[in-house]
Image 1 (cartoon, rainbow, N blue to C red):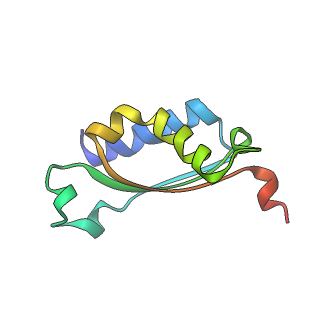
Image 2 (image 1 turned 90 degrees about the vertical axis):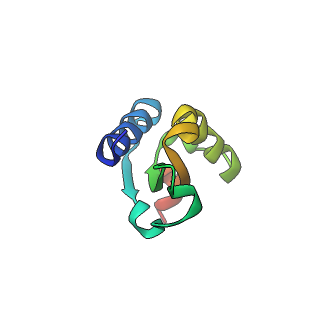
Image 3 (image 1 turned 120 degrees about the vertical axis):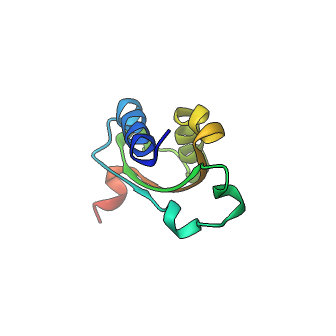
Length: 93
């Protein structure tokens, strides 16, 4: 899967699963050129997601929820995933 298609698929899956108020996905693969995990073509991504689905969930649960949605991609297309996941009310300070 090429990088643009890979990023679009991540966005689609996260939107479909969580209907977030805000979602940002950055492909940071260029920062990892020559990295052992990047040699096979898998990408490095950073996700910022704000969704009601995370209300009442701790950090580990939020990450697990996202990994479940991206499960197949984590094995085939994604080498590393940095996640910032928030419930909307946590940002209303």
